[in-house]
Image (cartoon, rainbow, N blue to C red):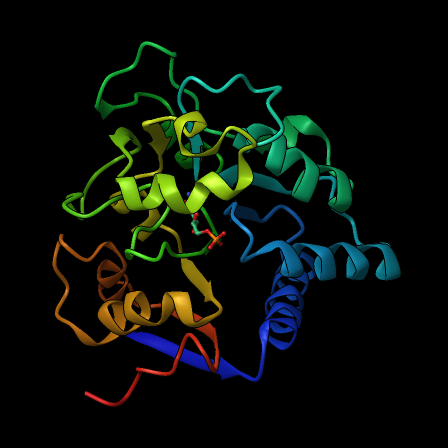
Length: 246
Ligand code: GLP
């Protein structure tokens, strides 16, 4: 069962999500938080950073686990997810790099499971709250169409649509976007105690409708979230435009 909250715009949704994250951190100072990259959660991270500063919130015991990372992109590259998470989460929230984990796989990896990330998450106590965005084609993390719902953290291939969408971050265009990535699997994501997915803009409208209103199936990675018992979608009106009309 997925709960749906439709907000007037991204700013309102980011504020609500940031408040919920801040409430969690106050209530559980050693919370384990799953963080997503992409443009969608940036506003929530900014608002959360402001709340932490305003309230002098203790962040010293938090742990963060990123969803995914490209393969073959040096960590120093500004668009590696190591760099993005450092820039958007670690630095603004004022946490130590050792509190923030990003999945890793060797540059010569091929498609298949990656050993120790899921164990690391379990050793930290499991994820209390997992933030997600969603791709235009319905991918979550880098779990593309066809990923089994019980997949652990693994290396997978990116679809052309995902590489094209993400090419906007790369000066060299789509050729610079790696074809492989390591990602928390759908099985990993579904183990989080609470999941929050944000989606904004009309580009996400079909992915959101398919995730919420079509039966859960591997061809629709976002639809796996229907199997979770505490998942909420925070949408703006554009992304929610096709919800409730079928
Ligand atoms: C990437 C990330 C996803 C993210 C998606 C959407 O592919 N791996 O975690 O949800 O992009 O990105 P955006 O939020 O920029 O639309």
